[in-house]
Amino acid sequence: MIPFSKTGDAGTTLSHVVIPAGARDRIRVQYVNATSDKAASLLDLKSATKKSTVTAASAAAQKVINAPPYAGAAQDDVVVLFCLPTGTGVRGVVDAVDAEAGTITLKANLGLALAPGDEVHLMASDGQIPVGAATKEVNAPTVFAADEGPALLELDGTSACRINLVAGEII
Image (cartoon, rainbow, N blue to C red):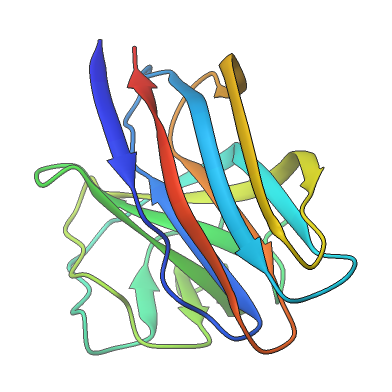
């Protein structure tokens, strides 16, 4: 078991935390603390549902990922890009897909460079925790678990939100 703790970015309308994990790694979130200014704010807990493997290098300063689109890939899909050698992951949002060219284009530049063998994971919601216009803390032996691949936690707000801390272990 490998323990982890991460802090989300301070956002206006979105704060997120990527918990990177490869292949058969399992993630168990045991603690979450989040703050939002939005009355109906939700902490969205996401896990990987589909993946695509990078076929050629993609630089961090570009939007195009050289990877065949996963089945059903569509604009506005939320993905996690996972770099296998470094064990790091970043969030992205799909802008376009080109199955013929074997590419996935993001709305913003890649947050890290990708190499052949790295992965693009489609993320889907597995559950939500109401936060509201407050600070919410959740602590349990297992608050959220992801069976394989990375996990993504997202919190919405109107002008200020932040995932203050996420802690758990990778099994």
